[in-house]
Image 1 (tube, helix red, strand yellow):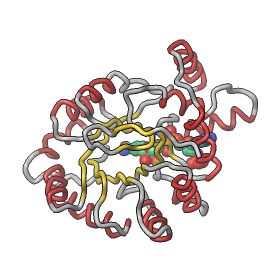
Image 2 (image 1 turned 120 degrees about the horizontal axis):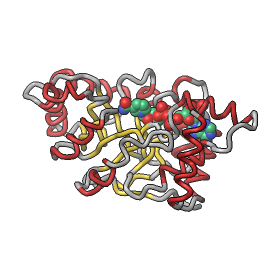
Image 3 (image 1 turned 30 degrees about the horizontal axis):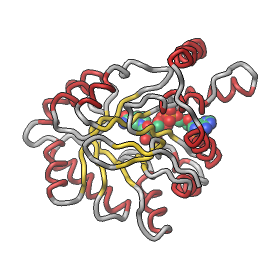
Image 4 (image 1 turned 120 degrees about the vertical axis):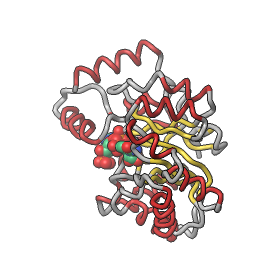
Amino acid sequence: MAHIKKRRLGKTGLMVTELGLGAMDTPQVKEGGETLNLALDLGINFLDTARIYQGSEALIGEVISARGGKSFYIASKTINRTRDGSQYDVDRSLKLLGVDRIDLYQLDDVLPEEWDRLMAEGGAYEGLLIARERGLIDHIGITSHSLEVVEKAIACDAFETVMLEYSAFYRDAEKLIPLARAQDIGVIVMRPLGGSGRTSSLRTRMAAGQASLTPTMLLRYVLSNPDISVAIAGVRYPSRVRENVHLALTYDPLEEAKKREYEREAQQLF
Ligand SMILES: NC(=O)c1ccc[n+]([C@@H]2O[C@H](COP(=O)([O-])OP(=O)(O)OC[C@H]3O[C@@H](n4cnc5c(N)ncnc54)[C@H](OP(=O)(O)O)[C@@H]3O)[C@@H](O)[C@H]2O)c1
């Protein structure tokens, strides 16, 4: 069986499949468990979840239990901003996932004005340091939609990974990716297909023959960047997993001219 290529997740040293799975919306459908199992069976080894993704950690916990253990990496996250709050969230995640430790725990969706408080004594970052010292989590990361925050996170040496948004629709954070790579910080790409709103509208336009760009072409665009570590495509249905894994197993990286073409098409679409 062919294997999905793996990339190093920065200084965590974890070797993660370049195609990961974002489990934010997976619990919304009855096929959610089947979707996760299929992804793992087909070799995806990185699942992204969060305390606030309704039912997501519990669903992953059920899958781990049914499979008789965990043989893949889990990244979860907290929107709690205090030392005690982030530790509380780690404990909740451990319980719902049914594991002794979590591979990566991230400060989630950080805004520029929250930075000082998060990083100060009593802030959520200190809580994650304590959780790591206690052996409850292995690595600490951060996620943000703010370029300012991602840039600070790359520069400050406190985080082993950053999660940023990057796709043919949204390239604002692209320039930060080589900076992260230079600091050996793992880059996790959220919303690699542009988000569920765009993809559902894209699927409608494809069906009407009004779009030539497809979700797997968008995935190919992101995977063609050699400096990212993993693209966590969000999926609810097993059919999407099959298509995305097929793409990951068969794609060649896009050439620059082709990338520009995809970007132009993406801009025209939305
Ligand atoms: N930290 C943060 O602030 C933050 C914010 C947003 C997202 N995230 C993370 O990033 C992950 C991905 O983000 P996202 O789900 O918003 O956006 P996305 O991955 O860009 O797009 C997800 C959408 O693409 C569809 N899709 C996937 N593969 C497809 C295929 N082969 N054909 C057709 N449609 C396909 C999915 O459909 P179905 O669902 O119908 O299968 C879903 O509607 C999330 O799950 C979450 O882990 C993090």
